[in-house]
Image (tube, rainbow, N blue to C red; front, side):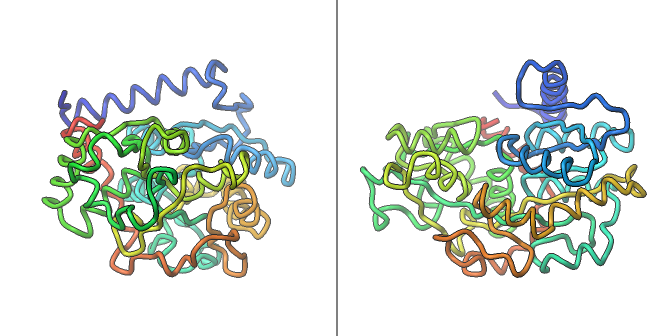
Length: 345
């Protein structure tokens, strides 16, 4: 079924509104709320299991109480665009650069102070200080190591539309990082080429999932031969199960749109321009302590110079696509409409 842009946007807002309502009622178990009017309000488009402990540590270290609303980054992006300057959110912690660029373009962010923004190298943060990069994450192919070898796995996503991969490729079309990959495809190869890829992969009987971890689990259990995910989900699962028990293997795709390095990041919302707590939270995210947390606990690339990346990962600069400016990933709505037109959303 095809959706109009308006219908899709309204659907996204309604979905997130229902999600947040459920979370506030404590029904989902995926959100926490202090119900404290003085608390710092954060919209978090990251998995609670990944960043919840860090946010709790922030409160313990600073004494600043927080009220966190968890949902996907695309859902929160839609909600922020709907709420506009009326939003109660003071900080948006996003899974990807695209959602941050979208709200920045809508004039909903407050500039990050230059002395803070300059901590993160250019290319991994906004060029106008509207948001700041926090961690790096590479898109990869996860493949079934019992059915495939690295030599037989495609080194580009174009190949996945071929008949031989029909019914064998899993991905989460609603995931922010997947949508950023599609946006990168539009930016790097043009609108027509991106539309052709989306239509072709949709016609190739893909296995659609709710999130990256579900995608990885399908590959790890032999139910899908290939999954499109972010690299750190493999390391998270390997830490739980042991690397020797991982059936899924990783193939990095340097130079290919399917292997882009995106960032998670944070923005201070416009209404919190003078909020010291909001600024302190963002400062905390790029502190040495938080950056080491991301290395040790979520296996992402740290962006603060001087912090070593997790062992076993290729060098970050070997994966970066020099032709892609993360600031160009802000056209999230066009990407979502493209996916909706192809029946993937």
